[in-house]
Amino acid sequence: MKLATKIIHAGAEPDPSTGAIMTPIYQTSTYVQEAPGVNKGYEYARSQNPTRKALEDAYAIIENAKYGLAFSSGVAATDSVIKLLNPGDEVIAANDMYGGSYRLFTKVWERYNIKFIYVDTTHAANVKAAVTVNTKLIWVETPTNPLMNITDIGAIAHIAKSAGALLCVDNTFASPYLQNPINLGADIVMHSATKYLGGHSDVIQGCLMMNDADLREKLFFIQKSCGAVPGPMDCFLVLRGIKTLHVRMKQHCENGKKIAYWLRANPKVDKVYWPGFKDNTGYAVAKKQMRDFGGMISFELKNESDNEVKRVLSSTHLFSLAESLGGVESLINHPASMTHASIPKEERIKNGLSDGLIRLSVGIEDADDLIEDLNKAIG
Ligand SMILES: *Cc1c(COP(=O)(O)O)cnc(C)c1O
Image 1 (spheres, rainbow, N blue to C red):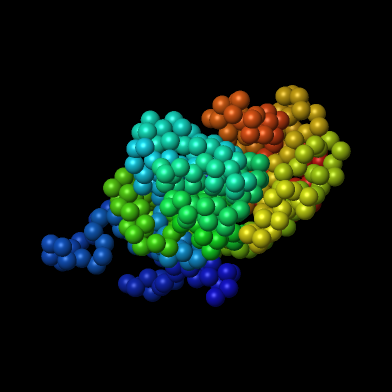
Image 2 (spheres, rainbow, N blue to C red):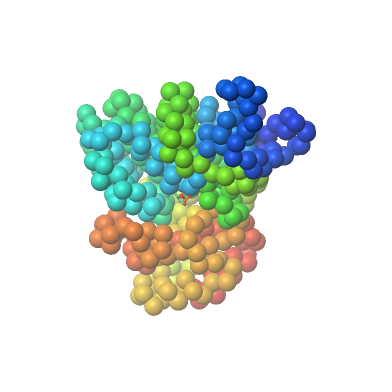
């Protein structure tokens, strides 16, 4: 089945009790049992909920995975993956990734004696060099937030396999429309469904997809034991969002491309970060593992003064100044003071994330209006 058809029909069975075409919001905490232990597969809603089940099936289908699990946020999904590990285990993680993942690793999990080694994963050799007998997990994000660096998922999967470690890919920026890490050898795919999967900036949610039944059992055990599950209303919203993922992503990509080239040609703009430029170091790998290049763009102004950067960030009207991304409406963000403020400044600068970097989540409005908005702001 082709992607567009899968996305529309993923996990969507008519409701068995009424025939309702849309999965109802099963707003219940428990299920009545016929006799002790005799039930319809649903006992208590932290463990099972029919709305969540429909969404988890949809998650699996859209990532070409066997299993999907839904969590109350993207970071809760990430947290659950780390809970597979034991004290003394090592994780090789990307040095350029979502600030909240970095905060979770360094501020929470390091206290439990899980060791994180941060490397530039765009060169697979760096990952290979960091492998030790204790390496149990490799954590990769591609394209990265916010510098759009590209990591070769297939090459890292190969390293993970020979190290006997799991590879988890944070696929939030690409979405399953652009990239399917399981097909490239990843063991687990993680998404912040808050972003492109939900797509309408109205829900916080995360998910994990995997093929291995044992791994699914372990993660399901963590999901129900630790309890970071999404409510049925939130599951309904993401189910609804997924139905238009492909049409939204097509427009995000088309608008993203127009804006990336427009920014590049603008004399006031210095460097533009977008994976679709042919002269990018990551272009060949991006072209190989992604279907298109998405609507996330970062850029720096030639005039990098604090005042000028703040002026531009506060001058757009269609691009709203806000954290998050992947919704139908365009957003503008200042990673250094907003999404990535939890990364120490020296660490940030060392990894190329400057104080002047501006990040755009290009929405699906008319691209000409978006360009006019940026043109007035950058002026
Ligand atoms: C937003 C985001 C997360 C965290 O997800 P939440 O739903 O906000 O908890 C993780 N990774 C990436 C790349 C993100 O953009």
